Image 1 (tube, rainbow, N blue to C red):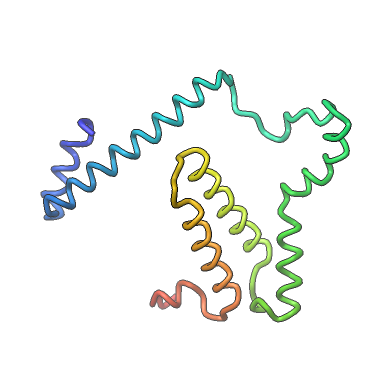
Image 2 (image 1 turned 120 degrees about the vertical axis):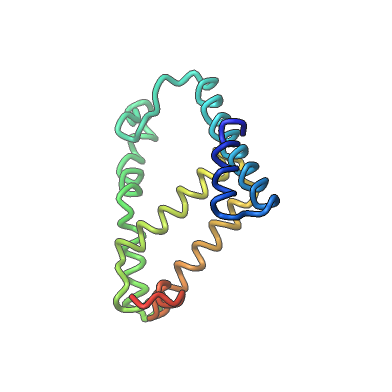
Length: 155
């Protein structure tokens, strides 16, 4: 917080912020800094020298892993979500102009965001946030009006 103090005060003066808004901004900076240091500390304490990806996963370690390899790798391409999305479009549950691949990406981003907030940052509202994002995504998929238009954006 001490590192951000001068910048935050200067910013508060320029933007004519109240004392409460300035304190809230400083507290947000401190929480963000603590969360970042917490993640760095956990990674250091884990004694992992690098972060691995699915490419380095040892499927041959056990027969069960080898049997599941095709199913696990299919999860990575999100095709199962896109396929379900296309089925929902054909059934009339989602709008006809919905991009199934983009929808798949958005679902995966929500899941990844939930995992990051819940597991890494220990955010108690991670589930609530993920549900709200997913409900907005579904509402957008069902409606012909995009989220941008609902917010009054003329584009």
